[in-house]
Length: 304
Image 1 (cartoon, rainbow, N blue to C red):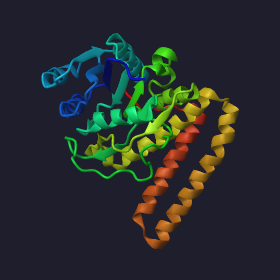
Image 2: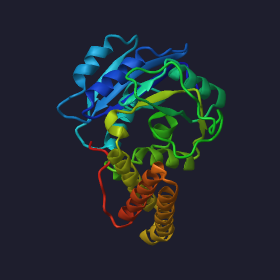
Image 3: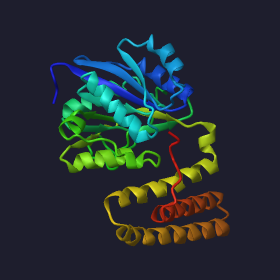
Image 4: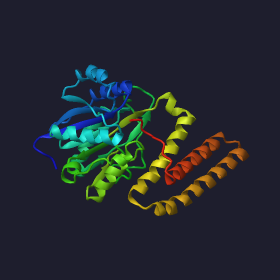
């Protein structure tokens, strides 16, 4: 799958998060680039007011490779990701690496993910996203021992992934606009790729870090993520199955969430464990998300 010229398009979707984008781009100025590969940076901004352009122009002078900034006027995360694929194709990129605008690349991220690609010769190479409160990529981190290198990942997100152009050139896959505002477009995209015969592998040392701002640590945000996460899971299932099938699948899960929440709450009361109260509320939020997904109550997760 290696070409005589291997162009790696590092693709970033962004929307009205210029400071996070700046930190992400800055981390990419420090990555180690292996021989045989030519990286390029492609940023697609979903803000027609071009809120990310100034920060992009400031950082791009520090890259030792080409970088491009575009605007996608059609709103939605799937629309932006499809635009990234289109722009990568125009630059003749045969490898695509996705990293989110709120993430920071470890300096060895690119070289390690490409080593994994060369070793396993898979179409999709996924790596871990480690939370951090820092604004620059930490030098030290703890690996996820539950996912050893070489294992096959489930539910591949687009926050840290490398894939070949076979997915969108040969198989003509695109991110589904059905998921434009609710998320799961990445899980759906890579799931369809695997069903089309594409192969995947997990590389545990290809590290990126997700910036956890103070707002994201608040309970309200945590509950919002679990609520919308529940909606997304059900809507993803409904995209490819009947509504009746969805009800039969998720009603027992909803009941299980509520029962476990009650049990967790009682444990918290009896043994005075405050963390159990939080767990109970989170499970209720997730269960309500499932119910919302079954009844078409949609909360936009991505304000693209």
